[in-house]
Image (cartoon, rainbow, N blue to C red; front, side, top):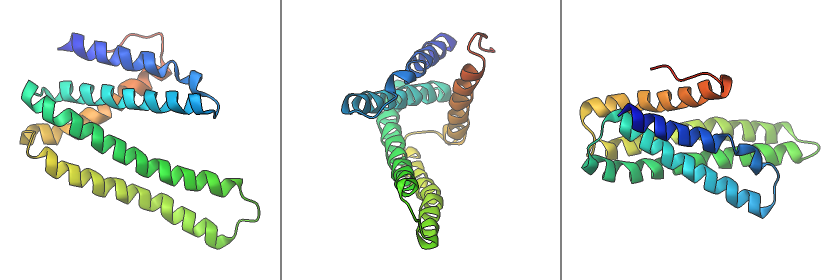
Length: 159
C-alpha cells in the first residue's frame, strides 16, 4: 500500500518538476499545460482513492466522479482568475469594476463549496461514512506532500 502511494506521489512530483516547460502563452504550451493539469487531476484522484482504501468497485465509480468534480472546480477558479487578469490589463479602472471583480473572486469560493457539496451527495452513494469523513483529510495530505516536496526537494518522505 505504501509502495503504491510512493509510486503515485513520485509520478506527481516528476510531473510537477516539468512545470517550467509550460512558461509562455502559445497554443502548444497551453495544450501541454492543460494535459499536465489533467494528469495531475488523475494522480490526485488515484492518491485520494488509495488513501481512503477504496475497493476496486468503489474506485471505479469514485475516481471518474472525483476527477469531474475537480475539473469543474478548476473551471470556476479559471474564470475568476481570467476576470482578475483581464482587469489588471486595463487602464483607468473604475471603483465599480474593482468592486465587481472582487465580488466575483469571493463568489468563486462559494461556487466551489456548493459544487463540492453537490458531489459530496454523490460520493455518499459510493463511499462509507468513514471514507466520506476522511476524504478532505486525504486531499490535504496530497497537497501537503506536494508542498513539502517543493520546499525540501532533496529530503526523503516521512513514513
